[in-house]
Length: 392
Image (cartoon, rainbow, N blue to C red; front, side):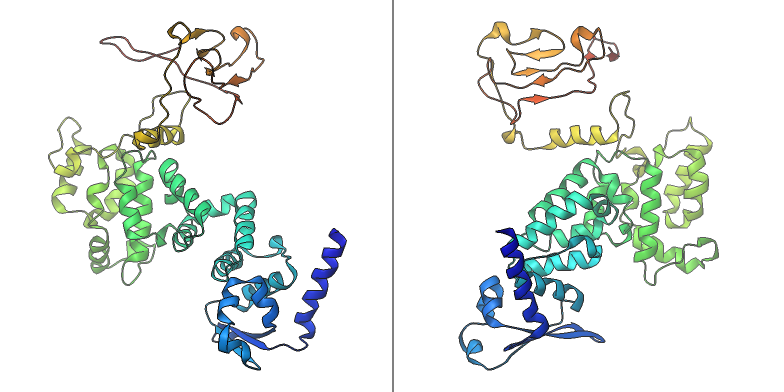
């Protein structure tokens, strides 16, 4: 059957090369990069809801129909047209920017299967590229309602790994509202000086006219323009967590970007640490980057914070049916007769990793969709009155 389908696909694609009895001309692209493709209404209408509507009525009774699609490049449309005719596409041979353009076009032409196929390919093969070009992916994802999976990826990244956004190659193109939202987060677990560096680069790119990286050659007017660009973000920077060394090398060169009173107080903060800062911006801490744990990093901390911030109505409250089995003494933290059994090693006497379980038995609700999982490490806290946390 597969061989028959391959033959059918090949024969239909030959219609594009021979173009016998075509009745549609589709011109795509702009300026010097344009191309006209010949096509057939019967195939276009049978494969695409977009063309089924566009080629109905009076359009269908004309000898030749002419379409102009300047928003699609010839390279992208050629791939789309071959998919419409032959239901085949070689994604590995397509550059990333063209692939995203094809994704957008597949949504416009109502090719849901192609949209899903490309999206799955992006997550399977190009997830790192999407992180490195996060701003572009974010923009595309939220301009198209159909790109739910991309939207979820962007929201999860912002929530759990916001540092990925700041380190993206195209960070300078981030929307001002999204940037403001990120800087206002209390769980932005990354060195504040890295946030400052990214903000300066963003400011250089978005100042009119854009500023050159070599700030040592800037005239005074350039610093004034940069100050105008960044003034709304300065109160969102946690300057007191920046080291004196970073202050000297990375803040001091841009002192004219900061309000005079703020810079004077910041200078006093580093030269006389025993003097408490008086400026409101320095007296109101924004974030706490200190993660005092040997097991979790900033990504884990951000995930925990994201769970705390979620709507509690979406949480699962599972009440114990038999109080005597609420907490069990087994190989690790365990609840019920398997409702949540966390095991690391057999009685902690060897290195054999055991499967952990989540099977609803002693509690009234199941708390996860899976029954078996493995735990690499877990952290136990003992809370003692008027004391510190002890790691066991």
